[in-house]
Image 1: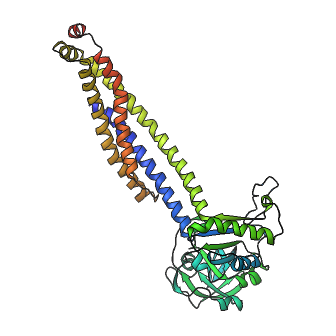
Image 2: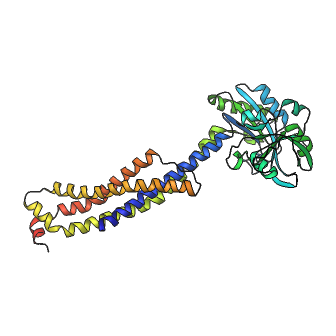
Image 3: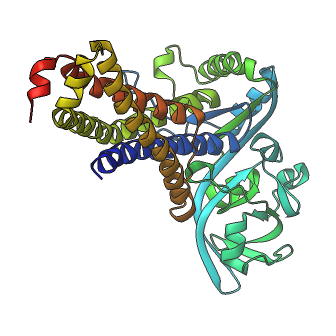
Length: 388
């Protein structure tokens, strides 16, 4: 019973570490997938003012410093790119047949579907002719479709009102899921010319999405876009740029760094229970040495060496922690599965986490078992035989 309760501390510690690491890795994979889902080989040009210190102001992304002409210049003068998709984005109140919702309306161009990996479920996406003629047409995201017309209803041909202006629905996008800026389910797309004339009443754009032809060229393209826009905006000092060029690879790397630190933090907190479990192992082994003093004395009296005694108690300690580690791995996997199933949080149990658990359990057995083993080996055999 005592051994079982001691092993339980190791089981809980190992299970906690595995569960926390799996949650952290699952979050990292989910974030990276969401970032990758907004497009492949993507660079984002966003407006924003810089302070004199070079730090980007809080107004970045909402400032009006980029225009349609900037997007046209990037398309014309920058090589090694596949497509350019400027957009203007703002939230509006949307109504249709007595229903209403408040959602993001993006005015953009046909290339947006290619740049942002957007697929159409029913109907069509934007066409160049609709941009030229400033057509009042709209493509709905699946969530917006459900809010306005009902779940899985085909709204193609129906009309909606955006900011009290009537638009005809020509398509519905496929679900992409995601959260935050990568969520393209609760959204409406309209021609950028229509959004600029009837909704925004200006020719500014909120983002210019640029798709590189190859991931290896993204850094070079980023530099070329920066130089081009600095020249167009008559800015000599790059620290005073009124725009920012974001590289998708840099975004993924930054997100991975943050989630990596988050995973280490979670594992470190869970690791405290492993330390407590190790102390429990040491306490139990010290008690065992005291209870088996006469046995130790008898073994030494008939020829057992100190090394034999140390190996005996180390083996017992390692077996306790090793068995606890095995049970902890199973429990940790079940905990990770439970979190994924019932809490809706993505988890990922990796081989590295399992190997780490085995390694840690073995090290705990050796480290916390060595002192009791050393103490047992140092007993005087004559005094040990007389011990009661």
